[in-house]
View 1 (cartoon, each protein chain N blue to C red):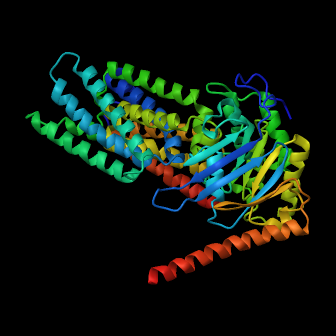
View 2: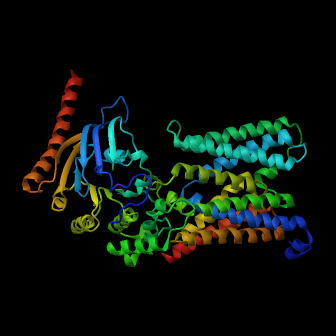
Length: 281
Length: 276
């Protein structure tokens, strides 16, 4: 299928294309950095729990504030608070002994989505745009969204940088880190809060369901190719950036949904890494 | 070894407290169960190399977890350098711990040097980078354990013995005064074990360390340690500052055997009682 104008021309011409491009790049990069920790600390399922729970937050926010002034800001704030709350709740439950961590996640995940479905039904109107929250709508990212995404992404990266060595040790061996005197309880919650922040940033771009891929595949790919932590971070960021660029380009050329395309490109990168690893061995 | 300076919490050289002091310790995982540990009075003076032996299931690991502040005693008191384990503050850096098996993922992207440097993170503090001096110290420690050529190697790719030595180097990073090793020679061949114990004894000599080593293999370690204690739910036997000779060794064996037999007899008695 031939596009009417080229990808580069469209970037020059249309603001929404530039926004989409920037959003994809920022989210792709930040998610891929965080995915290193998700993979090493095995937080993939917790990440899924938080992201699916976000649906409840989005639906609640839409029900409450959809038609009010500054609707975008309010919806964002409610979703963020909801996700942070779920992250802390999951973190708290997983530290206790009454319910196992995977059960807790499974419960929060489903209950939040159930609440979300009811909130959406209560709105009593066309529900088509909810699809955008589930699978992302990168072309709908506004300039003010870009500002919010950039600020939050910078915050995530600043926190990761600030606690770089502690998070590294925490991911390596939590018990030894605790015995050595590191604040492991704080680090546990910090990682979950970072995950929640990252998920909220990504919702508009890739959606609740696909964000899990962004938070796992680049890290998993990098782990196959790296024996050293810094290399793993760099490879993961590289995979994140490259798959965002390739995915956006392919989705433009083929006129297919961008978030899903990026995820498929990430999967191709993972498959290639597995092949490389096999050939090396 | 460096004196502790300006900890703000009283340098340990100034207080005369023993490295470990345990009195009247009792611990049970649940009220319904018999206590895992009971009536334990135990002192480890500074500069002493002690082997803690005892059969599996006798509470050695539980005892260590209490010393490390991971578990709280049900009753009784535990002090390291005069402070309770869960409230050591900066003194925590004075206790080096080497786990029996670190539960890290063998494909984790950390080098031997990275692991050793982890030992300096607590002292370095949040938001600070590890200093060049610490990096030099980490390399020196790796060299001491014959790992200078493997420092860039991924930790999971090293042999078990090499990993264990890297973990000791990690524990030594903050210049501890007390080193606690949990069954460090499991999975190491006989020759490697002899070498290992010699190295640990060397640490005591060179750094003036107090060392507590948990071991099931009394025969190989006996030549190196100053004291032996046998733990089976309670401290059955503790030889203090005696020469470890044949007689002591025999007693240690008897202690282990004795504890096994007692436990076995108890089970048989309970079994018969239940039948009645």
